[in-house]
Image (cartoon, rainbow, N blue to C red; front, side, top):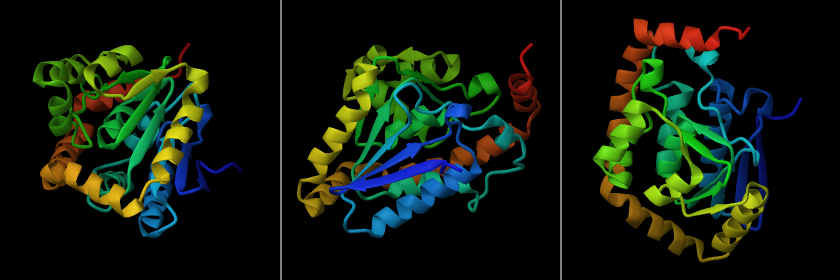
Length: 249
């Protein structure tokens, strides 16, 4: 059986690939556990200088696995999802994301915690939380307005409409847009270029860039998680998610 997260390490670059293409790389509990374990190991491994997170060139992730979600009664501190969110937010080494195809929900909010983001020209970013009767997560209610301004953040979160790669680049959510079939190679090359730089200088520079919001990010992750848990148990979310999970005729 193929691993749900594929880890490859070369010349200081650790690549973690979502590997559930039959489910459009929807993230479930097992994937969150595997990601958190990989991040914690990479934090301690001096041979890892840079992290690259990717899916396939035609699919980053469809977001959280809704069927997996329906079995949750709450998101407490020990939940694998929250463990992953805090671990990535704290990850001390540069993080690159390579995004092709859909990047839904956490597939987009995750990018707010990355240091470099490269998009394929087929990328589509969407934050469908309100549409599902839910609320923002992964400190996106804090970080997104700072990245794109309050009005645009409200549009993205409240209307929940997808944006394409060019719009994401214009808003400052990505560093570069390339042809989809060039995406993974470009991200790898950029990762290797970064990994060749002095690792202590890289980590200290990242820490300085992140220091202003570090405490606030962890506070808001937990604040959103409490609101998310309540929403998940509510009638709106239960109805909307059940509708999404109905087999299509």
